[in-house]
Length: 588
Image (cartoon, rainbow, N blue to C red; front, side, top):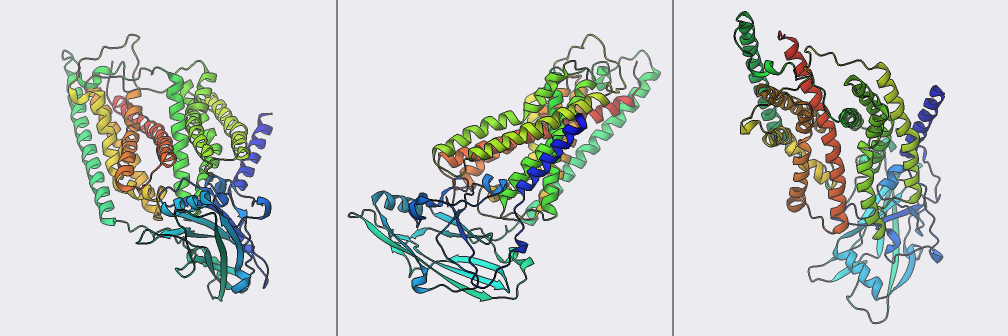
């Protein structure tokens, strides 16, 4: 029964993956004069990339009786807020369109329609269209230097083709074909919408089509400040290496001193050796502790897989929706990791209620994410934004969680509990815990967390700027190799800092380091979230309740995930370090 259930789950995972991947356009070949549909998608304010609305929320030329024919879309497109609709444009393959053939319709605008267009033009709304899966984007209108509002009511499409394939597609407008939108209209304003199409032959191969269709609203690739990044990396590596060198030298002296003390039995033990009977005392809240370890390792796997896929060129630079969908699917299929690790850890540290551990693991990350997402989705739904997921997609994601993520977590927990062994530690633990003496100010938890979070944050500070303006702006971040290196350095610095601070706490005879290591490792997430406030106020032009809610809401989810992941990394490295130093020291 278990094997049959796993086969069913794997089949569902493969179906989910096929939902993520769009149909390959490589086999799209057309005959001369064959009709290719132009899909209209949405309108988006330039400075608020998360705030998207349906294309026909403005009074463009809509189908008769508003009977919209929607294109079937992948999960990634829906998550990106895409709602593609068949338009009235007639653009046959390799056929120029001009004159009367390019008449689309004549719309009559009332005062409410005029106000909507003026608002969209003022806030730099742009539209999204798709022709043969090639994105076309352009501004709805513009405000000139005299404060007059102009609507671009004529679109010029320019295409290139190689034999029977579309290679390039773009949309343009000029000042000769536009109409002024006044603040007030007497009665009604009639607007004619027209278009033209120009086709040109090219020798560019179809395989190079993506490189020849950059997003016109996105700036060119970020001009990376390589010197700043390399300088930051070098300083952090030197600092971390210097810190590790000091800790190793101190440890060497400690070993020499303890060996000398073993020869003189009258001397009392001091320092970290004094807590050998308490250092491996099992933590409280075992279920939560185990769930953090399991979920943290799962999220680490998701990060590494996503970065690896990005480095090898799986993701299209402008297709963010595919990345979002890939994250969901990879998280679902890696649920077996969180279940296995948490079940193993819970049994290893003497847990007695495995069901409690499993349920904590299942809900530790998804429940807070669901609460925040529900709030943001409600805002988007109330404002009529396409950022709100359709009910069918919500049901499909819920089914994916219940039929894939949840069963894989249960299966992993069963495997982990079965193979679990008690922790192999070099020291026995006393029944009565040792009292912790007063500590100096620099070893208190607040200062400890500040240092543990600030140093890893400083290692990625420069890189964060480029990531943020790519995620929440119109710049494109493509050097994924540098991003991968930054992530590895973040993990390395977090490990070294946590090991050093754990050693400091043990030297102060504080044996309660288990939870302290998790909080220290995850403290970097608080600095990253604080940077979000700085970015919003200084480097961003985002505005409005919805966009700011999405920004802080989704960054809160990201930082929460980083807290769990880095907390698990911090504890694991500290545990290995503590186990090694006490294994090499003679104790009673």
